[in-house]
Picture 1 (cartoon, rainbow, N blue to C red):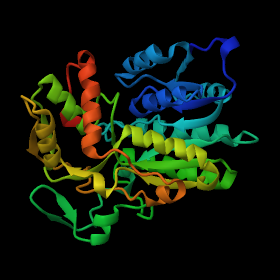
Picture 2 (picture 1 turned 90 degrees about the horizontal axis):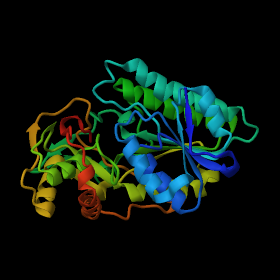
Picture 3 (picture 1 turned 60 degrees about the vertical axis):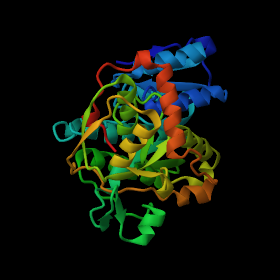
Picture 4 (picture 1 turned 180 degrees about the vertical axis):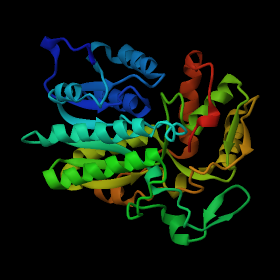
Length: 363
């Protein structure tokens, strides 16, 4: 059963941007930017994210009744049908991403990520002129990258192959779907490109690296590390000290989304890696040292040097394919991005959740 909120018929815009999962971290930031630009939005979200209502409250405080929401699940075809009729483009951000529960709940991952995505694609296929679809996939579909030889230095792993060290992982990398969530996301990724090419649906797939920023209350070790610093929580995380990933600040990601909308005609039917790139990589121990240097926490995070099999020991994004189509590149380096997040969290310290589960955070 869906619940439609804040959409008076006489004021309903004919053409909105539909954002599935729009009450989540990326979705709420995209919603804010679109509304600031004057573009009407419709957020479709099942509110399973524990901080969805908190995010929507913030968005409504800024934009009032222009925030249109539909409480529904992408597995509900009827709700999707009704929502899509009001829109001229879709950002599909809704997903089942509960790492650690994927082995216990593989059917949930399949139904949400695969069946939910197919519901959207079938709705678009039924249109005489399908509207554009933008989909958020992620780096996990490339697997553990175990074939890339790494060497250890004092604070991080580095690829022995200089090409990977300088350029990162490109879209030419074969998919390696090692767990149920990666399998379901990778399947959705491939279905979207297949439907785009076969049925002329304008669609772009974004394969995201580690994104961090405002309104990210859980699920990411970067933001949770800063929250723990501000809250004075001495948390215990389980990672490999030397594990490396590249970081992408949320404002840079939203810039990329806007550019993709501009260039959809030439980019449709393709996947694009998006991340901070080799210049914005950081290891766990380097991150802990950096927040100690920048923010001087009284209770720094304690990390147990316990590698987790699902994590990539090294990942850096090669975003050159997207850059060549749009001219995009990240504007925020890691330090600048962390300063923004720290400042934002200080302003909202009273809203910081009481319990921060750093152990479950992912790279």
